[in-house]
Image 1 (cartoon, one colour):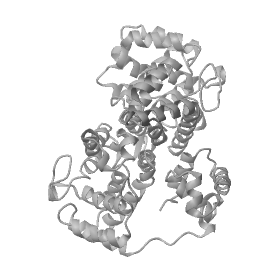
Image 2 (cartoon, helix red, strand yellow):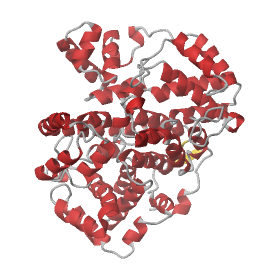
Image 3 (cartoon, one colour):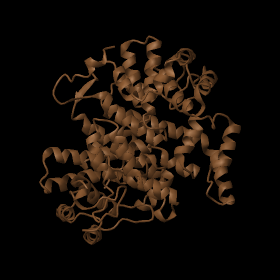
Image 4 (cartoon, helix red, strand yellow):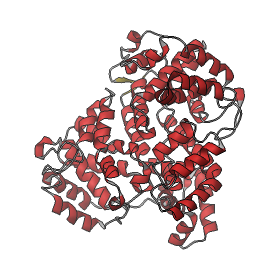
Length: 532
């Protein structure tokens, strides 16, 4: 392993550290999983200390390093389904069940269900939810793991990770005893890198809640079950060292982890990878709810058009586009249970969660130097020119131009697409709303520019020959409705076809797009600009 000073020197102008790109994604996953910021970085530290203690070859240590930073890359993709299933804040629920052991046995899960599921609903409705949860839990959880693993691998692939890292990411929820997901691989069939990272991503949150003794008990209880016994034993040894947990708690954990990055052909990449990262972040955000699928990509496209019309430089346009792609990053920390309900049904606490999403996004981005330039624009995109916005109450020209551009693009997309309790408007009606809000909520100059963009009309529909993966026009229609969360029956009713025909279309879509789940097919649609 090379010393940090070697890795600190870019080999060519414009090169960026892969670890910094992965670190941005990792910290975003802390927000999405409800962990403390930088706890995923701490998990990477644990994994690398363990890999060194086990004397893994440098190639395997490289795989461990990037896998640890990508461990939760699919964690937003199934939250909407879990929120509906449990009828509660699925972020906290998922942690309690998967990490803190409240789903470890039938009795523990029954107690957890009684105390948490559908807690806000009347008793009769709660009893119905209980019955549904007890009957369907194995199927729902299996689908959730399979979906999360598939999406995580797609993210790793898009970010340029090689096959060994993709395979490790795919196997993070498998178990040593073969009772894991998505395929039930067991024992030494599992990559050693995955077996090492498995310890690390559970150890840190358990340490937060139960301390060193809790981690020791977890390691003992899961050895030979979830965990490889040899890995569990090696971890127990290093976890008993005096300096180990001090390293985990270090205030300089980000710098410490950067120094642990093995030098390889992945260490330095082109600055263009920032665009791949921002697109991956956009899709990571927009898988939280069917209401926002491809929202960030559309906002970025409109923002780029506005910035160009306003005479921005190439660098300013790129910065605005990247900020627009990640403008809702703070929403990954808001439960899908909240995002999927109309605003008038939200509690005051939930409303405050929504209002704070620019703050959380700015804080997250500012923590990682490579994406910090976007932070100010993202943090100010909900400000209003009359000072009535949030979270700082900025007004007029105190709001960065890029943020004013993103605010208008965001409003256009919000008005022209369905939202909970708010059906989409026709474009002409949306333009009238923009005109009415110019000078109060929205910047007048930016509104004038977006009206010019909208006046250019929509892009012409693609011909069948122009559709990706050999999809037909009908299959794209089915995929769009599936991406909105509609059931097969609802899709059939909307398109006047039978449910069985919808099933056949979905099977063809999965085959053509090389996906296995509806969410992964939705991600394919987002990647290929198939969602209107």
